[in-house]
Image 1 (tube, helix red, strand yellow):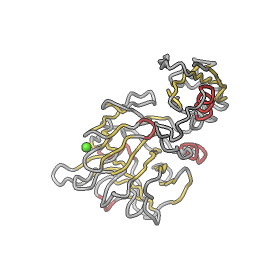
Image 2: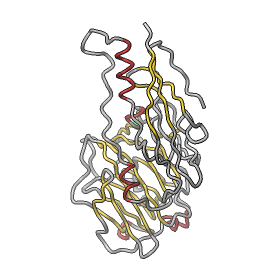
Image 3: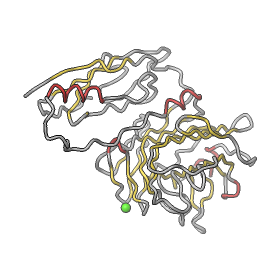
Image 4: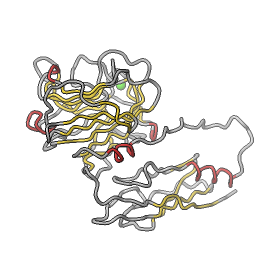
Length: 332
Ligand SMILES: [Ca+2]
């Protein structure tokens, strides 16, 4: 039984030549094995999975809440005057205590306390902040409620240190809060003159804090404050839970139906406004996908994007799915 079909999947209409911020790091956290969290930004700022988180592909990295975290490279805040940091997090009900979704900065050796850092946490309210020194100098933004459990949330934090300074907090791409205190805002790059070694996802810079009991994916760091539209585009619709591997109905679908279902299930986040590399899925509905591109100088079939200079570009990606059972390798 063999069926083959292809579909014109997406016309990438506005591959913007003029983004407001440069993407410094993008960790999809979609690995399924190994200890390297690959950076798709092109900066080669890969992270490291520590203490064995469960790597669940498009469902992200599941951190156990005991000691799992992702170590980011040293000094990633160096030279940053402003930034946008964004992450998707799905926190579990078992999370208690003080914890960070991510913390970038340093831990004081003598005390085990954070000293110079920025962070996001979900409790007792969703909150982000930055301090050049101790916690009581955190310039912060907070909401009035905790991060909800068992749902993917896109949390985006902006720091604009110039022009008097501004902080922003966005929930699923929507601006929800401005400053909630009046402490001075530090440029991220001024934290310990840019030398930071305790850069974590899923772990606090305070040694006694809890670890994150939740899943994370798509950590992004930009070197400037993105526009409201760009931040809205970082949020993607809820990904459906993974389909059960065994259908409850014993009747096997016809091959052509499986192919059609696989093709219609493919989606590319933000395909109308591509700014970084694209996460092109290798499979859909259990079938391998073979990608073709109309312009490999802009978008390669492995999802690597070379942004055209001074113009927008339209690239047609074609997904080809068949039931011949061969897992076709993605070509570079
Ligand atoms: Ca562990």
